[in-house]
Figure 1 (cartoon, rainbow, N blue to C red):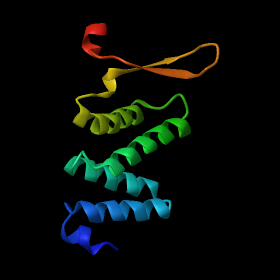
Figure 2: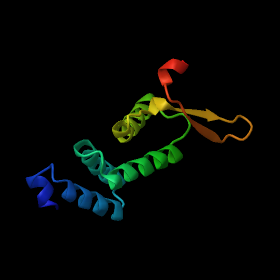
Figure 3: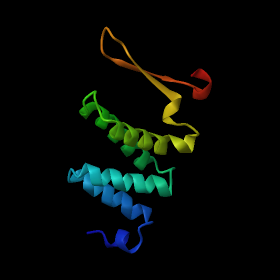
Length: 116
């Protein structure tokens, strides 16, 4: 399929193009894996960060509220991968549900270890 990636798995441009192809053919899991690989090699690639964040938000929408622990850990790992270049982690964000409406609000926490 993509001989450039097979010859050089660190070739970022080829990984991005393959991820785009996977997206267009609705192979979203494969696309996400390529975007993660790109971020591990170069966290400054905006396209990969954006794709991972979109995937993260779509995963939250599709999953039922009783997600198992492993799925939550995987989502947190993905979020941390995207946030790490900015000196942040998923611990910097608090999610609270409004019991009357069921909607969620997300708050930024500067020093998450001081607020526990």
